[in-house]
Amino acid sequence: MSGSAFLDQTVALLERTPRVLGELLGDLPEAWLTEPDTADGWTARDVVGHLISAELDDWIPRAEIILRDGTSRPFDPFDRFAHKERDRGVPLRVLIERFVELRSRNLTRLHQLIRDDADLDRLGRHPELGEVTLRQLLATWAVHDLDHVAQVYSSLAASQDGAVGPWKAYLGILLRRDAPNPAG
Image (cartoon, rainbow, N blue to C red; front, side, top):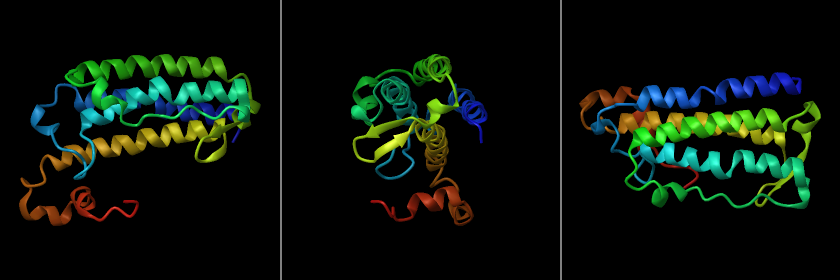
């Protein structure tokens, strides 16, 4: 796939995530928002906070490092839990608005950064994974969105875990919640 087609397809997904979360979570009654997706997981609010952190400190900063420094400088560490303290007491509506604003700004910046298809194959250095391409970083950004949107849906379903009664046996989203974590 050509770089411009790859970039267009990736941005097509990335630009939708804020709208999806805004529509799904905006003005949703609090009763839906209090449960994490798993016992040690995140609520929908946590996910939005984490996505904000990634907009601030992950995707674009790492793309800029790749394009400016290549593999000579590893990416800065990313604090996956920065949202916990930073967003304490901030209303979900405000967090969603912040995410919308940051994502829009970052997609504009992404188009400024990528001059041609060759930029997508430039290398950077992840501190744990080693050499990665800008194309891989952008693909990961999109799949990261999908992963966390799924996590939001799981947390919303978790709020109804006890309410569904015996129908839980037919609801994969709740059954996966109780499954052992192979990574854990």
